[in-house]
Image (cartoon, helix red, strand yellow):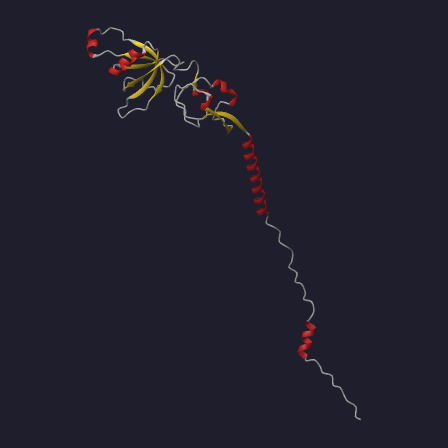
Length: 230
């Protein structure tokens, strides 16, 4: 029996080339890493520092607050201030403001408002007038004063004035040297001017003198003289 010959198959040249190229791929060396730019790092550090300072400032301001007195409801000039007119508010200290601390409420209560105080206004020492309430034991008389019957300097609540009876035309001719009649009063409130510039001025007058002042005001023969302020 003739021997059987086995022929070995040779791999094609192309396959051999593929086998030689197979195996793990080499890792490419990316080279040294680039460091961050110094300028960007400096900017980041600066921004972080600014943010920290800002946060510290806001915390400090929030902690540096005091309780002061404010107006709870509108207070007209001359009104005696009561506890119901005031409230306590918390504010940051400001050198430009001089509000009255809550601990000094006794310096405000029982005194008269020196001017109209709108709700929400911070109360200062200038918000009130010292001494007795302006209306205590007094009558209130409204006087319509035209331009020339009031001083150019603005009147304020608490101002002391002299109410002068100005003579009429006939009286001026009859007794030119006669001294005009005067009555002392205290300004309670000054109204807004009308289109002609006239203002209504509320005066606190002694009860015995109030009818006379009202009579002078009704005829328009009146003038207000501002006495020297202390």
